[in-house]
Length: 226
Image 1 (tube, helix red, strand yellow):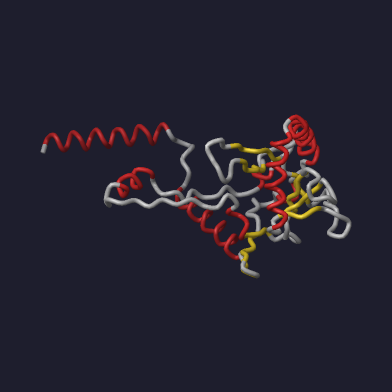
Image 2 (cartoon, rainbow, N blue to C red):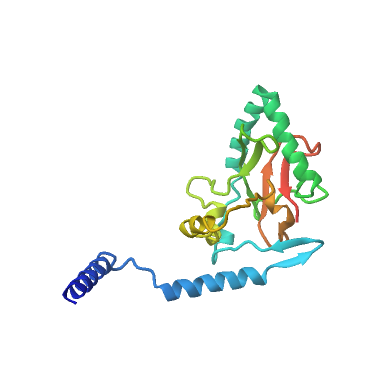
């Protein structure tokens, strides 16, 4: 009994110590939970399903939509650097173009022309992009990755203006424990383009555009389809 009391006393002292150390920086769990619920409620209200595709609204932080700069200068400068790599490596250019051509065929992106409205400076955010190459992959060796964290000096990025997604991954420790329960384990992977079955509502949202190689014949400015 004496040992238990001492252990409890030590535990209480440690808890009090950390509570004092964290004084003023603790997040109210109830307020945090209510904020998360409100964000999820607004996000779910903006989901619609049409033509075998989901449409979702971007989860904007309050008053942040109008504060977003178009980022065109940064995207253009980084694309000029990318073009130099294309000239120096025709194979790299071919693989990169093939990925964007596939996006175009699947109606994920479209060329910007006068017919479908030139990108407005006020309602557009230009996304720089680059390639991630995996030499160990045989089917999807090259993936195009868009950088929503880029921004001009003193300006906000698209990521800064959106609520951060919640961690939906399972706890690693529990995952390893479950891994040991059965004698056979089955694993799977997602498509290299998991977003192709969902689209952002465009008319009331900021258009996401980018500069691309002239593989789409009509223009170097490209945007994601509605």
